[in-house]
Each structure stands twice: as C-alpha cells, then as structure tokens.
Image 1 (cartoon, rainbow, N blue to C red):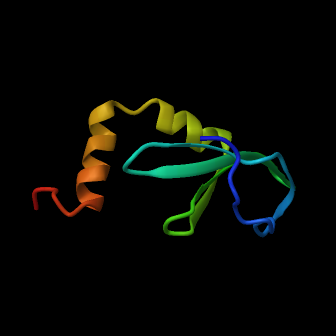
Image 2: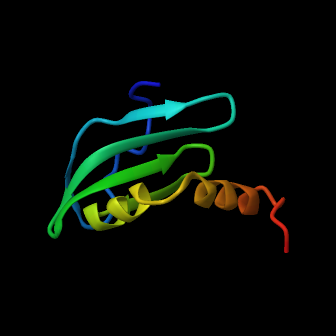
Length: 85
C-alpha cells in the first residue's frame, strides 16, 4: 500500500510532515508518516476506515516493539469482542 488520500491538515502541534505511506490487507489498512512537533519527531498513524489517528513518540514505539505477539492478539480479540471476560 503506497501513499493514499489522507487528511491534508496537520494535527494540533505538528509543524511539518513527510508524505503518507501505508500498509494493508483484506482486513485492515493504515497510513503512517513521520511528523515533527515542537517536542520532537513522532510517528503519526491514521486509519481511514474509522478516521482514528495517533501520534507516537520514540518511547511509545520502543515499548510497542518490546511486546510479545500475544499482547497484540489480546488487543485484537478485545477489539473484535471475542476476548474472554
């Protein structure tokens, strides 16, 4: 998935942004780009289907990268309503 038509406006606090890139499959698609804020660089992730977006700083990305795959499996199950309660 390459650059798509995403939101053209910059989120609050973002002063500059690189072009959008993206990944997707038959179940999901996301766009991402590196942005600059007054407090440093962030990764902006945007989900066109839901219009959700998040800015992640290097520390948040480091924490994500340190997770086991089972952590994400649990998140997906919860999101889909199939997690055991």
